[in-house]
Length: 165
Image (cartoon, rainbow, N blue to C red; front, side, top):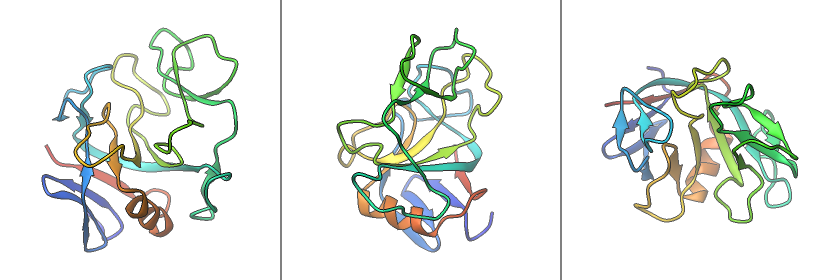
């Protein structure tokens, strides 16, 4: 572990000597993550991307990419683009990245089951804004908006999210 890594513990997300309250998947932490189980996967996951809504905030970090209208994330295990960013119109099951709510105004992408996904092993794990304290995710890690922004401003590509079981 390095000082630049994010460490998920039972007491929150630790980064650069600070602890940030967070929420995880409704299925808890699992070493055997599967599509639809709502679990946050245990293990070490590299941060491979950062996306933000340029109509709602300034670029948090020079390597952050804007979320454009029509940006989607495929979550259809039968699709060749499963667990990859795709564009609308898109006929398969997907998540809209440019949402009306603020959950994905800013998010970090981990390399969980990416870029060469194993079908059924679960969609990508994001670090994004929470709905409210204690409200679980579908497997992602979620933080308070200002905490997420602070981390996004300080993090660099290749840092890791370490999830302890």
